[in-house]
Every structure is written in structure tokens, then in C-alpha cells.
Image (cartoon, rainbow, N blue to C red; front, top):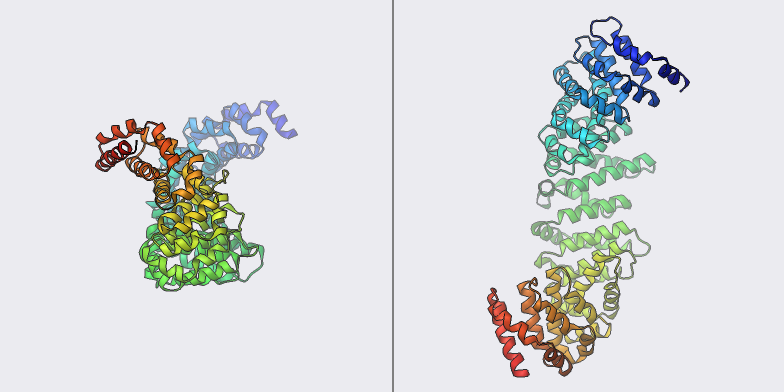
Length: 569
């Protein structure tokens, strides 16, 4: 600190600027001194203020290797964590010259050249670290293909390889870099490098580049084709029984990355191999393991494999449901919330194909899922609701059985008020509606009325999502047709008639909403008190306007409703 103050006060920095000339024999030494001075963070801005950047950038055009090396060091150190340093190098055009050097020197593997390449990579790193616009500039200058080529040629050189990895890690965070990376053979190079690493820290460095790159679907597929999955499975096998902290961390990283690769449709399908694939079989074996991280990754992987009907049908036919139910069973009391959530996600996805629903119901999935009804964790509640809703779709008997389950219906009504958790609230409403729509059962309607669920269905009819509005209106029409007497008071106090009037008068309401609102109006005429509300609200005006609606079904229903209203009045 003291020395740096002395240097600053002495005016020597300004003198250095005049000494940085290409022909001078002391140029490399001066650049070296500046590099050492700039290691001190308080000296970086003074170096810029003394006008050192422009002559240093000029020196990048030198043919002398030592001058280039020391100049690269000096610029790299001045840029380290210094906005002023970076700006000055940017204005002087330093980055492009360095990238051109990397390109032209790329193929030379002698030690002196590799040292220079390492310094230049480090300089670009310091220049652009955590600065999106400078990183974007380097990407536009084409730095990515050059660095990938460097990695391939110099993979024996640890220092240079490390520099390339750090640079990739920085650049890979930028969305715009992913397409450039995808057009190189980065996947192949990284997998090759990964296979060579015995040291945990080195593998960690490769992981840090793989994770952001694997968010891109094209690169996912390239990584799968380059054999990354086999490496990951091997790590899992090696580390699964270890209780060393770094092994546990590596097991998590490897299994997380595996799950990420399965998020791409093509990479997932390639690894599924019709359910016969080695990878799929290995992932299946994670589910019954005693390791929570593997249970979690196994369940998430199954949820990812279960993204199309063919895979879902194959998995259900081959006993995956029983494995997931066993896993859930192990996590009922004080279980691991992330494992519960993942296993329920997998079951929900598996329940989507029509042919799977009856099979899963008879396997006892509803009973397994209902054990989590007492969970206080919103993510678990959300998936539980979604799984039940998928299972009862067009399954009348199951819908009736669940709809008469007072404990379930009461919990749904409670969750319909979960204002802090929109997802749970929405799913609870949708399940309430589904129980009525799929069972068409008077007993289910009575249970829902007794549990106080009607007001939530009426509110659901005003949802911002058309699909939810529609589900609510269809359920309310069934209530009005099957159990109007029982529900009458609740429908009144929830102001259903006023809401229907608003929906019909609003030009923005979707055609199916208008249609179902009119069907519901006709069904409500069977109740004296609701009938009176309809008359008081001048529905005829609104409905008669809809007779000329562009949607034929709406226009037709408007004519029928108008006749009904005219007769009843």
C-alpha cells in the first residue's frame, strides 16, 4: 500500500508511458513492472489515468514474444475487477487484437507459445468477467470457436485447459453464446477432457461448464452422443456408498446433470431406447436405493421420461408405478419433501394417457397419494392435486369414490383459500370441479355443498383462465341439474346470477363461456329464489343481443335461452 502511494506520487507511471515503445530493449521489462504494480487494486485506476493503456495495446502488435507476454499480463492485471481498466482496453480495441493472436497461434504447441496463449486467455477473462456487454462483444468477435479449438489442441496443458474452462464457464451463462457453442465440437472436447480427470477439483471445473451448456437442447443431444451419460453413471456408481463430503457433492452434481440431459425431447428419447436402454434401466435402479439424492434423481428422471404417451404406457406396463408407490411409502412420515414432490410429479405425468388411468387406479395410486393429504408443503400439495385430477379424468367410479371422501373434500375447500399459493389454489378448484364433472353424482355434490365448496366454484367462474372458467360453469350446471335444492342457498349467497350476467354482458368473454353461462341460467330457473334474481337483472336484453353472435352454438343457445326466459317471465 505504502509503496503504491509512493509510486503514484513520484510521477513514474507517466514516465513509463513514454518508455513503452516497440523498438526499445527495455519495453518488456517496463511492461513486466506495470503488470506487477497492477496486481495491487489501488494502482489500476492510476495506471489508466497515466495513459498506459493505449501504448500497451499498441505493443500487442509486436513480434517479440516476451513483449507480448508481459503486455498481456499488464493489461490482464489492469482489467482485473476494474471497470475503468476494461473501458480503456475496450476503447483502445485491445480485445480484437488478442483474439486474432489466439487464432493465429492456436496450433503451436511449444511451451513458450502455450504460456503466451494462457496469458492471453487470462487477459480476456479479466477483461470480460461478469460483464455481459463485454462478453457479448467477445462472442461477436468469434472467441468461442477459437477457445474450443484451443482446448482440443492443448488438452495436455493443465494451465491453458483451466483458463479455457473458466472462460467457457463465464461465456456459457450468456444465452447468446449457446448457439455458437452448439456449432462447435465443445461437447466432444469436454467429454474427452472429463474422462481424463481423476482429480475431484478438475472434474468440478468441467461440471461448471457442462451445467449451463446443457440447458441448450442441441448441446444436450451432443453431450449424450459424446458419451457423457456413461461417465455420469460411472461417477454415481463409484460415489454412491461414500460418506465423504466431496463425493456426496459429486454424486449430486452428476445425478442432477443426468436429469437435466433428460429435459431435452431428443436426448430423452435417445436414452429411453424404447424402455430397453441401459441408461433407463440404471436410472430405474436408483429409485429403490437408500440414497435420497439418487431416489430424487431417479424420480425426476422418470418424470422426464414420462413426457409422451408411448413412454408412459411402456413404463406403466413394466411396473414403474409400484416402484414409485414404494418410494412414496418410505417418505410418508417426516419424509423428504423433494423426493415426495418428484415421485408425485412422475405419477402425475404417467397418469396422462387414457389407457394408464384405470391401471394406475387399480394399482392403488389414489390411496398412496392420499397419504400426503396432511402435508403442509405447497409443492407437495400442488403435485398431489394434479395427480388426482389426472387420474379421475373420465373415470366416473374413481371420481365418485374420491368426491364422497369428506376428508379430501374438506382439505380441498381449505386449499381453495390458499391465497399465498396460487398454484395450490387453482389446482384445488380444478379438482373440486373435476370430481363433479366426471362423477355426475348427487352424493358428490352433497358432500361438496356440506363442506362449503360451492362458493369456490362460483369464484372459479370468474378466473382469468378460460379453461378454469369453463370447468367451473360445467360443474355448476351439473349441480343445478342434479341437486339445485341442496345448493340453492350457497349459489345465492355467492352471487352466481350477478356473475353470470357480467360474463354474458362482457364482450371479452370467450364463446364457450357465453354458451355455458346460458345453459346454466336455464338450469337455475328451477329454483324460485334464483329465478326471481334472473328476472330482476334484465337478462333478456343481454341474451337477445347474443342471437346474432358470430359463433353458431352461442347464437343457437341464445335463441333457446331467450324463449325460456320469455316463457318463465
